[in-house]
Length: 237
Picture: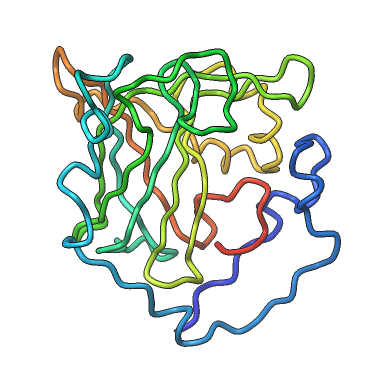
């Protein structure tokens, strides 16, 4: 079967000069629409045996001699398709900066220190109800050279494979109450306010661990009018 075509009026434009670092890699011509083939709508397939025991625990999966510094959080939610049905056994990958706002990457030269006990990446597999969860450290904001004093709000990157390559989604999750969200040019390449709100995870005290960990709930919808959007990307979704 075919996946629904996405509503391009809700998607970010391919060419957005306010997001300066995207300009050189933005398409200048309209993309072609092709019918999905069987290979694009039926795979890939993942199994639990492909994951390690600590892949969804970023507090422990890189720790060397203690826990990483920062606020411990749980992120959880469901992956749903365009008809609001759960997407089971799909791979959800995530990566982020540490509590100081720095990535463990050789090109990140922000003055915040590297945390020796935090790697900043992991993955999980959804269960039969499309549910996923992971434990991590809340990332910090960081500056970037879009304008003289531009700052990225705290965020976590997500890659979701769905039930077929045509559902592949790469996006970012933000945190409820962060004042930097409304200041971020990357966020505001999305033209629809409701779509922006779907990228913001609310606090979920019912999912929190008392005296230990605050939870945030982030549902991910693949395609359809309620889909979780790419940022400045026209392919996929």
